[in-house]
Structures are given as C-alpha cells and as structure tokens.
Length: 209
Image 1 (cartoon, rainbow, N blue to C red):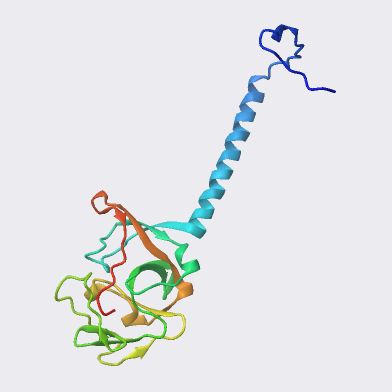
Image 2: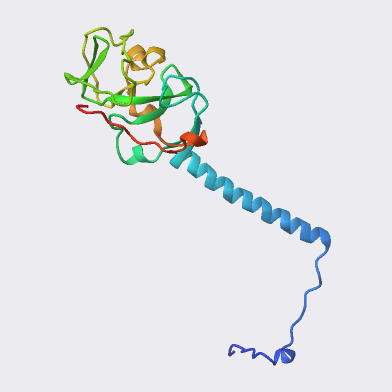
C-alpha cells in the first residue's frame, strides 16, 4: 500500500478514529510512572558520576590550613588516577589508614621509589631539600613515630607519602607511614564553598621537588 499524503486544506477528507478520553486516574498513573522513570534515569546518572567520576567532600579540621579551612566544600576528581598516577604536590583525598570509613585530605610529598627524610624541621626527598612554596614562612616539619629525625625511608612500589600543610596539627605519613594507590579516592579538583575561595584547585609544585 502506498503511503498517504495529507495535504493542508484537505484535512476534512481524512477519516481519523478518535480514542475515547482517558479518565483522571489513568492520566494520573501515567504521569506517576513517567516521573518514576525520570527519577530512575537521573539516579543512575548520579550514581555513575558519584562512584566513577566525581564526589563531593567536606573538609573537616585544619590539617591543611592555610590552604584549606574547616568546612570547605570540594569536588574530588575520581577519574584522573584511573588513567594516571598521583604526582608530587597533588592534593589527594584518601581513606584513613586507620579507619576506612573516614576520608583524609593531604598533599603528596614523595612517590614510589623516592627516599624521604625529615631533618632539622625540613623535608628532604631523594637527598634534595623540598622547597614548599605553598606553605607560609617558618613552618617546621617535625618527625613523628614513623618518620623519625634524620632517618631516610624509601617508598616501596605503589606507596605514597602524604603530609598535611598544617604540619604541627596534622596526622599524616610521618605518623602512620605511606598509603597505597588503592586507598586514594581522587584528586581535590574544585572548591565550591566558600564562594570567596571557589575555583579550580591548582597543583603547586615547589622548586627542586
């Protein structure tokens, strides 16, 4: 059968059988089903983003002061480290080595294969002084239980040493050692609160790092 062409002005010649109008409850149930389907789609998209691409975090505490403050809101990029590795100076979010339910935010100081040492209130990586330009002047880095004064330690395969910027008030690799890449959730990417400090977070790699 040939397709029928409907020409404007000849609508009256076309025989259209009208369906009886649907009742109120039929219309209502249709809208409810459509709404639920929309929620499911949006929920699936949100779950994909949350688990694979990005995740919101709230900074709790002052271990990264003055670069981050208590209650700062950030977005963590979870995708980059699926295709690459953390670099020195990166600000990372990871599982607390002592309690996986908690998340920490720190700065990467040493990479797998690096030798790290704390001596005379300063940090040395591979024998070179780390010039930490992201810290205020005269911020001492003191040894703790794992990294002791003047004793170099070499990071193993897949091991990263991470420090808080607020060295005197930070629980970090000096205390409990390196973290594995599998513990790293992602890279701090965007700060969206407070508005005054909102924007993309730039990695600040110091000289001779």
